[in-house]
Length: 578
Ligand SMILES: C[S@@+](CC[C@H](N)C(=O)[O-])C[C@H]1O[C@@H](n2cnc3c(N)ncnc32)[C@H](O)[C@@H]1O
Image 1 (tube, rainbow, N blue to C red):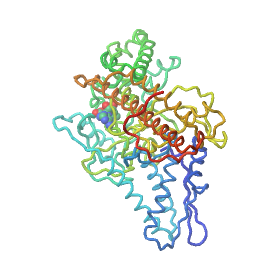
Image 2 (cartoon, rainbow, N blue to C red):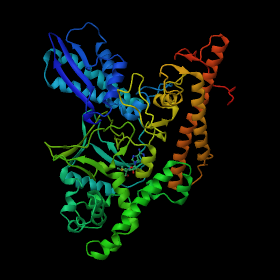
Image 3 (cartoon, rainbow, N blue to C red):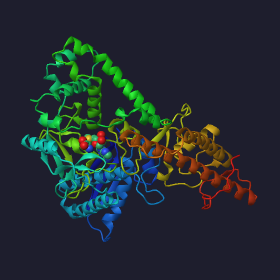
Image 4 (cartoon, protein in one colour):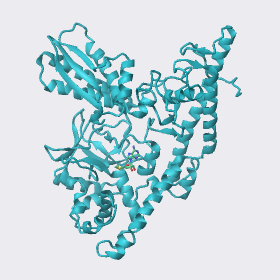
């Protein structure tokens, strides 16, 4: 999590009491929303949690941890999580955003460690108990989402071994080995049991491929004269040539790179056609067009004007595309000690695969004391287990386009953005003093915990937007059943159209990697859209039932309060669209 989203502090108050302070940072763009949510949940507005040095309650640390966790989850939530109503388990008890839970636990652990290191002896044992509970909760979370590591044994890792040896001789420290893992190419495997806080990998800055290398090269005087060229593009052009330099300092790194990357940018025509009806098709086509234009601006002019520095045979379109895929799929944003943020290639760290609930969450800042990049564990990783990194909070379409894979598990960032006229911004009921949602979206409704009347598994900001559009004076806690039906019918027909555009389920009989991936992506889209259609139908049944009840009891209730619905069985038929 970005540190600037969270404000942590601790201070001693009177006698045997101590305050932990856990609140959103005012710098956080979502500060107002989070503050309101915390208030709505009845949390103390200053973020204070009081610890007492004397307590007779044996499960006191667990109780305090529950409070801290509830609070930290809201603070650590991102825009998508807040839009969809917070981090919870869904109706079947499955945790759908373990990453946010992990971030929350991690932030609590940092706060406890900070407090412990400030050396308040009266509270050391209480804080230690709290720390133990926190670590247990992190372990429990890891247990819930553990992915099985399947190592593929019939691949040699000679180039990878050479790279590891070179790394070690250059000062790299590691508790990770490399192996081929099923479905993901190479991966990083823990060589010993790793605990929270252990450094799995430490890479000296001298081993990182960064802008500095272009500046020192003979390309720089030429490239710097090109109007508008970015440092990323310069570095990409440098890597295209350096890859072939047998005296390169980074020879072992380049030798260990895959010959092909298999990202969405390399999709062939059949895979592209398979994506018909999805937004991913446009995303890939546009991304590729953008790269082609960039290439055409630079080549052949650079090769013609400076053939000794830019030999034409090293700067073909195919090689340019390979380098783009390398940088998109392996580049890491690193903050250097001078405050510069650069996209870099980090040898050996490039073996780490991505997970929705990774072991390593925070890694992008060079440690000024050691001038190295450290990869500390936010959750334990057992010996022999694959150690995962977080590449970022990406949707599956982004991961397919720029990385060429779909992650295992439910991706909470798989949202469909809705193009809704947001001139009429929807505000929370008590006026517009807090942020309004101007971007609306939906995601698989199986991720939602509330499928009851007036919720339907759909995001509240979206429903409120439509309610307000239908009836601008209505309050958000009072709903009109006719309006509800109208909204659900409109949503249903929009998503039924989308489902139709996606077409029939493709039989997965293709043999090529790209068509297989495109088929899997399209199936995922279909699953998301059809869950929304199903939820709209179920929602309509709930509303119709409520209306029948109101009519039967002869109480004229065209305006009712939420929460009056009985627990209606929503499966089965009997629904007729009006
Ligand atoms: C930084 S590299 C990681 C090392 C990579 N597996 C290799 O063999 O070079 C990123 C690439 O690894 C693969 N990858 C990463 N995470 C993955 C995952 N969870 N499932 C499948 N492939 C993954 C994708 O091909 C991605 O483009």
